[in-house]
Image 1 (cartoon, one colour):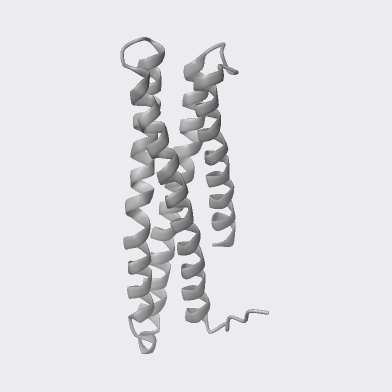
Image 2 (tube, rainbow, N blue to C red; image 1 turned 90 degrees about the vertical axis):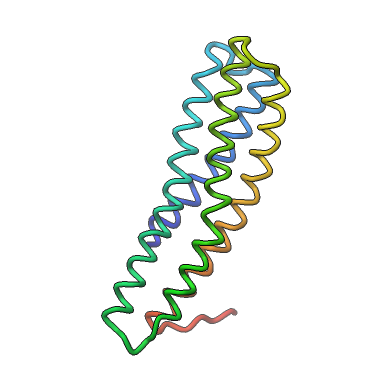
Length: 160
């Protein structure tokens, strides 16, 4: 669990750097040899990072459900909390992924002269906004899911 959580943080951080680089490359052409290759490279990292975050919560939810089925005296409250976390997490995570892919496609279409540059600007700003929004929600969701796992296993949480 901890490995995938840390890997998710690393992948999301790399995604943010990549998103920033795509924007800079669009304006300053520092990766000028082949503009689309940077977009595709960042797309692989971005999609992998967001997918890892979603599957982390799918796996954690399954583990919590199975644990609670094996220990029926604990009730279903913890599983309901995990379900509520996923309800908050998935919409912005999916939105940023869709916006990012649309932005990359529009960047490629602009690069070959098929669409106006304004489409890229609009999608880039929206993607950047949703990236930060999704990242904050993902961070809070990681904290909440950790609290659920700690409560489930009976390990107390202490703030020092």
